[in-house]
Image 1 (tube, helix red, strand yellow):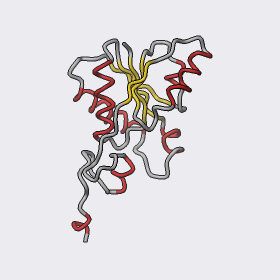
Image 2: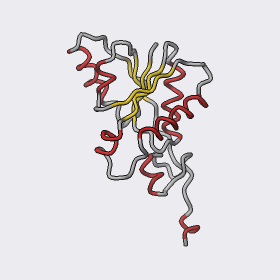
Image 3: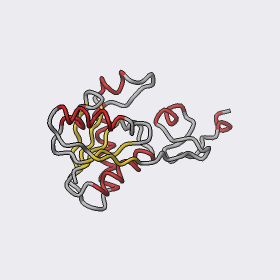
Image 4: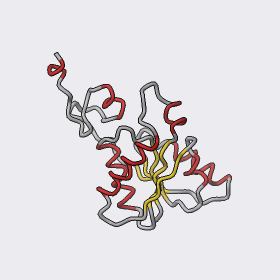
Length: 158
């Protein structure tokens, strides 16, 4: 099965690692990481995002560290929301979070319009921080949690 996972992945945290791990686990015919372009990533967010080259290098490092199966992994630049998942005929599945799971139906509609087979979805649950809220790159950037979900102690800043 050829599996894709898509995102901005900057900064990377344990939620992203869970997505990567699922893609690697299921992607016995290869894994495609669709990494948002700088323009696409920055257009969707109010916070700063590391540039594409930095995010690509960090994704590659994380994938290499997590890949116990020796998968063939491709990192491709993503320029729009459904782009690669809706148009790449080689894909069999997409790994998503609960936040983006609803997009699978639209992606499969777009694939059908292109005469492509539907793709399967693997929904990976959110990884929670110590406070029970989900870990996110935004929370990392704000200094609320570290990449593993530990709460950052504000008392150290005083």
